[in-house]
Image (cartoon, rainbow, N blue to C red; front, side):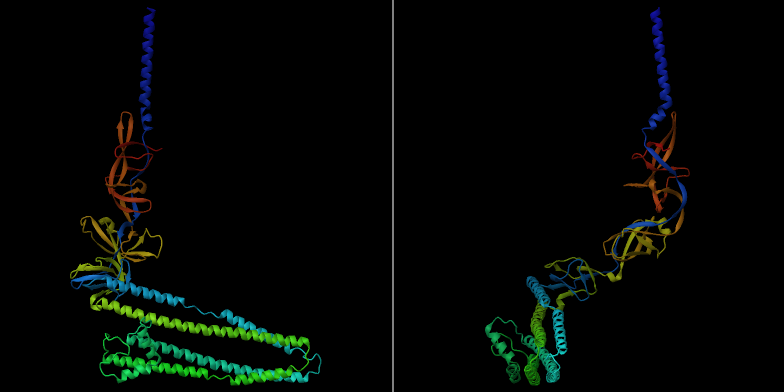
Length: 578
């Protein structure tokens, strides 16, 4: 009996414990489950105004593109430009023909090498700066003047009985002044004669180059026979002049010329005669200038120097003091130093002048070779009629052909982008967005970071051909540091507008299906209210820095989720923060 009572007690206690556990789980199950749900923050969907800016991204295109087309069926022998290269009106774009292009390409490479050699020769010329030498000469002259002043201040005899010596000093000063004047006159006459000779020699070189070009001669002729023949005529132009004057049409070739050389025409004869006569005239001018230089006399300077020497010799018979003699020696040494420095400077100037004259001759010959090579390229190109040139200045946007291609009439060879006609870009927006914009609105380029400023102005609002019912196409004029092909993101519109549904920007999401927000829906259950994150697809109407105006299945009193402690998906249970 006692055992049965104890068994009933145990059953009763177990039932009480079980019921108590069920009661605890019933009351706290809601709290336990909520702890495992994502915590979210929410805000009301409200109406309000937004300083609406329409944003979009578009590709910049040139307003003016010129298509360069073939005027008939041609073979492209050479493409003279590259994509991205700037061209001017008249620049050669393509060389046309039916032959091989290798000879033309070789001639173009030779022209490039000639031009490169010309530039190197020009750079090889030195800039002659005589400043340091002139300063040394001036310092030497100052030292001489100081030595002379110190000498004048001394008593040559060491006592007051120096009248005879001082008289000679005054005579020496007078003779020295006359000597210096004679030297100055001599230097001026010599400099003028040298300048005239240099100018005459330069004109002779120019006339000689004109003769070589007219005769078709090479200044660096490798054939010794032809070189000797050319030099004979250049040394004595009268020989060639007599031949040309005595010749009848057609003119015979010069002595020593090849029998295969074609006989020149009467026009060639007249042109050559004119060039040779000019050369003869310039050679005579050189000879006259040389004679004038040789005629510059030193007689007056020599006589003045002799007078100075005589007085100095007489002064040397006086018994001057050692200090005075030292001062005389110092003055003479200073003057000799001055003369040495000045003579060295003059010699350097003369050497540089000869070097520059030689450099000028080399440059003239290289210019002649460059012109001859250009003429050869023009002949290989078939002349202007076998060339396609740019009609407008611009940038080569694309090239559709390569050397060796055969093109038919009206085939597009290349496209030239014309920057002067400006650039534009377009992108599509909704009708509601377009309604808040006006032509002429200024746009802000948001992905501009460096370089010159880029400006964009709304130039047209048209129906979008791809979505004519719902969208408009915005076109902007773009200017500044921009080129075709660049992608720009712009924002436009400053007008404030009211919207029914405005949500925080943090509530807006985007995926492959478009823009959306999560709104919170409440569900009743036996354990209390449950909150569900429900996806609502929206369309963005306007946006500012903090808020977004949208359209979609939203209503008054709806909450949208702005932040979440974990990623969400449609239908997830959530718990509200706070």
